[in-house]
Length: 484
Image (tube, rainbow, N blue to C red; front, top):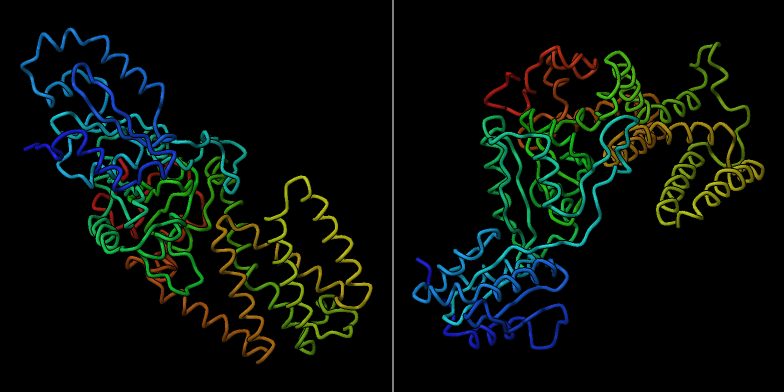
């Protein structure tokens, strides 16, 4: 039953000023106006509303005063519902809920009898959908997600025209009141996974999610100091839609162009849309190269250092691998210095303005690298193999996984330097055991390798034709695994 929340519009104005302060925020609009013959108070956030639509609404109400006067017996609620047939009108029974809607960009209205409404005239500032820099393809769509959650849901809805597609909206944090959407296809996504996300979100009590989806990931999955990513991020709407149809769940956070996909395994981080934009054979070759790059990015540099350290065990035909000269600085320290230098170079590339980035790269790669070799700080082999290891890491489609691989590689390098051959193989075993022990949302991180599912593993290694029907991934625990 709708009831008035204020005695009159002056009571409402006092309430609004008590919350926002009078004249303290220039973007808070508080205006007196008439909706037909009804004195009203308008409250809105300047910059979050469509001013042209607001002008049209006021023009419409002024031109239909005579019609309302002939129906003077109807109350204000009936008037709002009757004369705004083309706008989303919501009536509120809570002052806090009404204020929250106003802060999200809706037009708040208080009538003379104290009833409160909102009309959805939101127009968020932002950019148009464009291709993400991190997930480029040669062929494919160029409309990536933006910072506008309404645009993001529309991009997915355009690709999945199914009445079972659900977008559950919730607000998270006390002050930020961040709009967050759980997206899934009802009947395909596992209800236990959905309920797990709902409960974890309900337990979030914090000021705000200023870092958007990354902060949400840490709250939901209790990531702590684990280096590996527990979720997959994507900025492509086609990738998100494909995962939803597989039974995955997407989490969208307003102000973030990235979407969280769960549940995922380590092999989801090694997939790329380009594999599915090429012929199956070409896609398979690309996928195998990427999988090889993943293993080599972890093992290449530590294994080379092992061969240098245990040069007596290197076969005669592989003697070219070892350095021709040792230099004044131990090779282990050279590798560490080179790895740290490459990280600083990456950071510099991120923070350098675009017009200067090319010059910065030339200075770092040619001048500093060559001089470092000439003065004896590095030997040429260390520079070469460190650069190859960096290139292998850049071949991974997931930036988060690439950073984790660098951490594991350095740990393996330290174990090899400290304990030789035993340290190298024990380090690999410990990394493998760690990955086996990780189960975000109860899903084994190395599935389908551990536990071993040969058919599923074959589909990860080989890009089968789309016409070759496959079941939905077992890790999603979808109640309907047949794709038809």
